[in-house]
Structures are given as structure tokens and as C-alpha cells.
Amino acid sequence: DAKTTQPNSMESNEEEPVHLPCNHSTISGTDYIHWYRQLPSQGPEYVIHGLTSNVNNRMASLAIAEDRKSSTLILHRATLRDAAVYYCILRLRIVTNAGKSTFGDGTTLTVKP
Amino acid sequence: DGGITQSPKYLFRKEGQNVTLSCEQNLNHDAMYWYRQDPGQGLRLIYYSQIVNDFQKGDIAEGYSVSREKKESFPLTVTSAQKNPTAFYLCASSIDGSSYNSPLHFGNGTRLTVT
Image: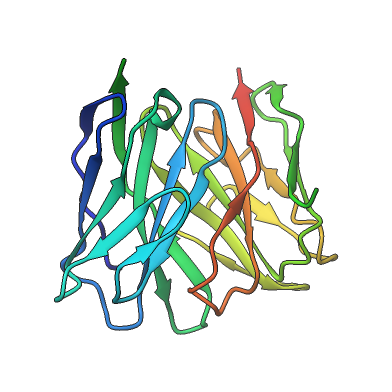
């Protein structure tokens, strides 16, 4: 299965932009890149996803490398509420067509006031 | 509001007992998933179901069983055969299992402690 690699932790100052990287060098052509974030003792929350082009929504932006082997989640102005574990995952297409996804250990983002 | 409800939030059991975790969704999603999360680690897939009356093993299915008799419900049974059952269990759903373009929606989990 294709895997993702993320830094264990990152720090940011409040109201500054944050760039969270993700490597997925074995991604296949039909895999979508998804980002989720998780607060302690809660379920993950969907943030954004994309295939090839950069994507924007109200929460964040997703920049995807031209070769699709890496991507970056961009939080334009970090707030204290953005402190969470961020997961980059690939929504895989397998033989049975199920949307099987593999989660790594994620990046713990700390936001300093 | 539509969403996924997992109950109970905390569950305690004695070793050797089977226990069933509830997961209900009112999002009208076809696909549902069960994940396990251990402290400081990511999520590992236990079972998933693309449609009613069908389910597939994930990466760590041993010691677990599921059923999918209704679209809204996907209960997970942790059997006595699961060697390390203490963990945080998360249920998720997506519009359909074949559309990897569709986001996963998660419940808020059940924390199971077996002593």
C-alpha cells in the first residue's frame, strides 16, 4: 500500500502561516490526497483533499507537487484552535473498489500565542 | 444535524468477555469503517463495509467481528480472541466506498478498557 511520511511535530506562532509537509512518493495515479486533523479524545475532522491541482477551502489550502510525490497543507493564519494532530492520507483504490485509507502517525502542530 | 454517533464514550470490560461497540450514522452514506487508535499512534483499519450485508477485513481484523444489516448501523464486536483490546475505537463513513474522492466522516470514538 502507498504510505505517507510526515514530520512528527511542528510549531507555529499564532496568526502566522503554517506549512505542513507530506511525502507520498509511491502514490499511484488514481489516489486522492486527503488531510484530516484530530483533537485529543475526538475523532478526526476532514480538512481538505485533492488529486492534482491545488485546492482551497475555508479551512486551508492544499498545494500538490507537480509529480504528486509530495503535498503541503497550508493554514494561512494559525489560531490556537488549530493545534491538533494533522494526518495526510491517500484514499486508495483497491481491487474491490473500496476506499481503503492508511493513516500514518501524523504531525502534532503546536501553536504558540 | 447529520453525523455519526458512537456509544458509549467509555467502556470497561473484564478480560475474556466479548463487547460490542455501537456506530450509527444518519448521513445516508453507503460505506462505513472501523479504526483502532493506540496512544500516540495513527489509525489502523479493522473492517470496512461498502454496502449493506457486505464487509471486508482491514489490516488488523483478527479478534474482531462486524455486521452490516442496516445502512445506518455498523456494530463492532471485540472478542476475547483479541489479545490487546484496550484502545480508542473510531467509526467513520463516506458517501460510497468506491469513490475515493469522498471524505471520511468520523464519530467521536469509544475508549475501551479491558482489565
